[in-house]
Image 1 (cartoon, rainbow, N blue to C red):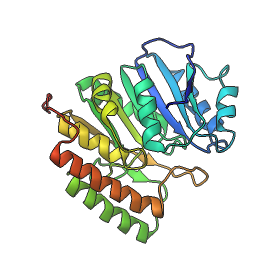
Image 2 (cartoon, rainbow, N blue to C red):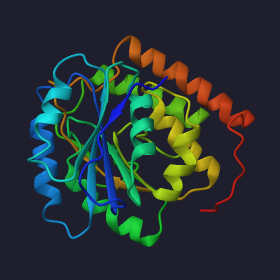
Image 3 (cartoon, rainbow, N blue to C red):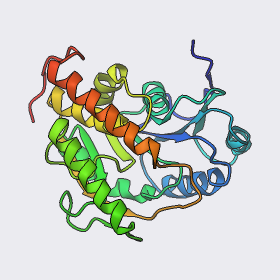
Image 4 (cartoon, one colour):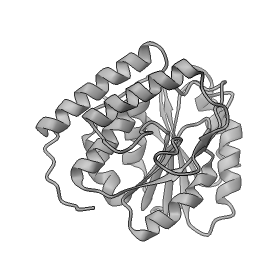
Length: 264
């Protein structure tokens, strides 16, 4: 049973862009990030909505979002008391979103919202999915403001090789939390996703490739926010790889029931 409470908002019924932001225990981040979004979007000539999906009441995140309803333009939210995981939360938001383009990003804004400027040309060219990557092998110019420790980089590289082998060959950074989908792609992919936790990023890219949707990549300048709850880490990393194994198998046997309708 879904016990989410969904605000109607006051923005356009069918805006050009929906930005979906999952949020769990982000009370120290919410206001700063939403005001940054508001600053960015107010200068744009397209219509938009900001949809925050609250993944459980672990702190006062929901109260902070509601308190901003009169000062942040086109703000909507889904208020769910039970924590269900990032994958579940992104799926819920992307299905509730109304935009012709649907972008999801993390509440820490580690990949600043201005990266959407880089995505727009590819979307206008006809790409179905456009993602940010922190890996120069995907997109020249990609970088991280503060490099991770050597052992974490090596672990991440090994994990990515495993992801490429099983699910999505040719993409070196599947996990950067800044991904945009056309309405058509979003409505095909998200209703059939199964992953409720961290491997959703891998699953949706694998599904996009399985459908035959075209995928564009732009470089990210990623700035980590150490105060946020975003990130799997520890047991979560191992659990993510187990989820990746499931996704690879499901795609191999096509248990999603996908008929390839689109050609890149």
